[in-house]
Length: 112
Image 1: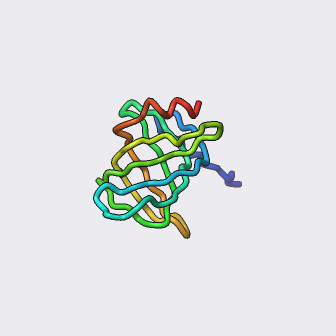
Image 2: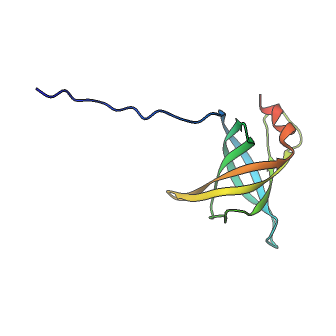
């Protein structure tokens, strides 16, 4: 009799992830339009720096510089961070993107 084996895929990530659902707005630096709404899904800390993962209604090209205004519970003003889109893909009715942060990283300490 052959046994049913379950194979577990190991998560090889070397970064800490902080899963948050945060309201935010983003501005694409290469576009002449206003702020768009999005949701921050998580913030991660890795050897290469910090990054965020977010949901948006549009696909954003990798390499695009982007600014976020992130609203944190208990804070009167949003925090502003800047980064570069590393990837973007469709995830159902929305798009999911990953950003490597380049400015304002220290402000994310308010999340912890």
